[in-house]
Image (cartoon, rainbow, N blue to C red; front, side, top):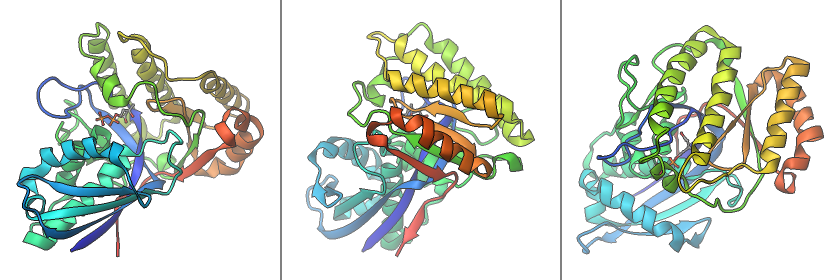
Length: 342
Ligand code: DP6
């Protein structure tokens, strides 16, 4: 038995930052993201030999090479999902994974990686037992690997975490946006500027933990909940200026929480701020709906309507590449569900 899936990375518009106490990987606030169609992981899982160890057994290759540094996170993941996947008890797994973007660019691959792996597990479980796992169950599995991975399951924007006004929203798995989206947002793009390709000084998992006992955390969770209400309204009505305000405010609040942590830390670099200022000037001068967001790193994601692709590309290449490490940036369309590869 063998299964191969492609799963896209995603970029949060309202950020998941902080986990609930109790439970495993439950978000302290709800979030919403776009999947990045052209930045993805492809993973093949094959089963070979019986597993006689009594616990999940696997080997893992990343871009053709054994990758011991990924083993602890994968082991935790398999321990968490073991009860739901009988294949883990029955067989030893061979996992081969690769990204279509260069490793070490600071583009988060844990979302696409655990997303693709979870799709493969579900497909193998189906082959083995006939049990069909729906997207929501696969999303739940992916969450147990990395929280943000649960949002990589849908072409539509994905919402994860309980929100009192969104029916079906919950902490266990992500759901697709349950409303039609205004045409203004149908064809968005994301240009990811690689500001710093190095290893981050503080991992996301550690960063989440620093919200425990943080006196600003409760206010931040309230802001995220409000921003989700507002951004959904903007997505429904096509209100681009509200959308831009919320997306940029979320990026800055995420990084503000890092500065307000104890120990405090800063993941933005001087070039991150230079890009933000240039984006604001460009938007003021041209009226083009170009906005920035950030994940837990120095890189800048620039979101814009596809209709403005040429102007934005010219702007990036003439004014922003000087801030990018090795002049690297990657462009992706928005919106993609996982794809089964034969
Ligand atoms: C800043 O999902 O990487 O990108 O659940 O510990 O694996 P773990 O963290 P992770 O955190 C992502 C944080 C973020 C915001 C977001 O994607 O919502």
